[in-house]
Image (cartoon, rainbow, N blue to C red; front, side, top):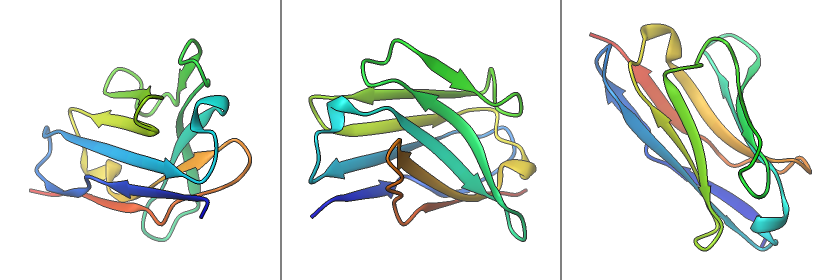
Length: 113
């Protein structure tokens, strides 16, 4: 079955950190670029970051640049997102996506004091 499964979300205080994981199965993970997107309550999807298949090209949205780090381990079919210096406005559902449009079920990140 072709799927993406995210994990690692949770409730943290402002300034805290989380590490999200996305495990891929059913397709050749190492062939594809990947991205993270998020959806805040009541808002549309927001692109956060993407990474090429070989991790040689990485981009970030201005809203997370310098705080979030995307990475991947092609030997483990896993995509990561390290979230540091979290802000309340980072609250939302975080999804990983392939460049061919497959999206996981998401993992919730809540930042609150």
